[in-house]
Length: 372
Image 1 (cartoon, rainbow, N blue to C red):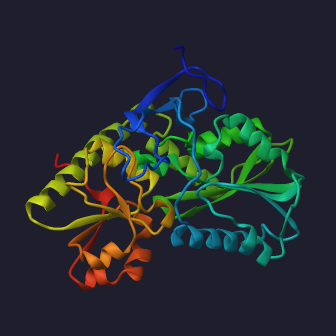
Image 2 (cartoon, one colour):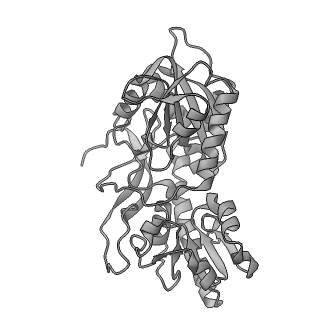
Image 3 (cartoon, one colour):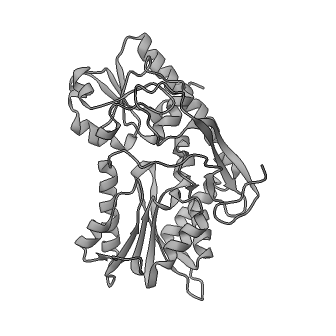
């Protein structure tokens, strides 16, 4: 196999910064009676030396339709983003919006309609073109961005929301790497990608979702380059300070992966020895690699609760842990509920007060680390 080609700039110089070995497809949930073994595929992150885009090295799987439900935190963040756009004048004088779909981002079209911005019915141009966590699912990043930019009408804006590589590296979110997610954007890499299609970032907003997401508004670059807005400049400065294009710095995700997997297993073993009952919550794709790398089975984790009915009766890929309905939280009154999607904490505490009322606790699975 020759050197990989960057999914954006086609450069062939880069570094492998995270290697999770062979992992099951994170979006294929087998039936609980299916004994396996599940097929496994390489899961690796590669950092392009030319443009700085972090990306999935190869993808031998075929993505399936997501089975999950939309978290309240994501819905709330979308509403907050649209309010920011309205408040700062980005919706003024703009009447048409187009949206590229995403398995994770939900839809902003209803929120836009509330502000008098109507959805474009066909594939024609729009004053605002929205992509919320969608473009990362495109294997050819160069073509994907060009397609989105081409839909922006004169004087319009391209709105890109992404889980920033800065956040992923700073918080050690190694499990963000998964099959079907082809790109992991730093602001500096995305600025270069936008320049290649004749766009320049105008302003950026940060949100707490996933530990740190960014909404970047970009417009066609004028013939005379303008300085970056202060909000964009701050993100670029953060990238430089963190060394987000340095493979040694990004490569620390490998250490985080080892520490987290070991910490997860150690905690579950300790709970079992202590006789404490534990169930998981959130049968998300991001939980697949941690469970597999930690060697977790139903002896350590009897079940994972999920509100998505379509997942009930299935199991987590690569392990025999079944996915069950929320009634387990009241029937078993667990001592601890291991939360695999931290953004759900406020939502689940409200939805299932009986967990804490009976003396149980919610535990952030991503906070578990092996002792150094």
